[in-house]
Image (cartoon, rainbow, N blue to C red; front, side, top):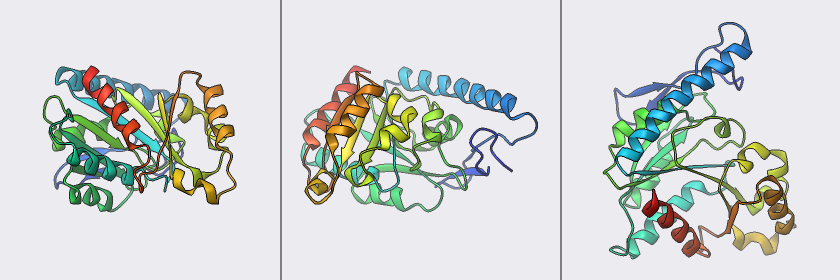
Length: 251
């Protein structure tokens, strides 16, 4: 079946734990506009429940979206490694919901660096939705006061359209993506409070003008924060840490 909103095929999303599953999409069964409205309305209702539950348990949830290969998982690995070296300095308990179409590779990477993670596989679905997050949170069972990081499916279109119940949205791109991604995919970048530009260590070897990228971002969202970092070398991780902890301590 085809998803009425974004045109992708629809299957059941599966978590890494057996016996826990969530539907990824409604199926097309009539007028596409009505289906689109019903799909988003139903998702928004579940997202509201997720947000209420997170708030009641003093859990901060961040939706990390971005291009395939931007380095989202690598940034999360670096975050856990960085927090480990600073144990006892204000880091809350952290856990991750990993979204991909197939495999448990990314969840295993987080677990290998000492993090708690649940993998959500969307099958042919191109994004996470609120029902998947609801099931993922039930499986993950984060402690009150935790920081939950959601790594959405690598895609600059559909993830931006679906509220998960998160309190914060972060867009991530890499210098290797080129300077025009904000102009090509404005909805995602305009809807995020922070944009992370990764792989900054590669900029000297590329013909990329980051001034143009940042100017485009600020035209889309004058209040957006922009962080340049390298998840591989650690450059800029202090600013990422400060941003995360400020949100975790105030939500």
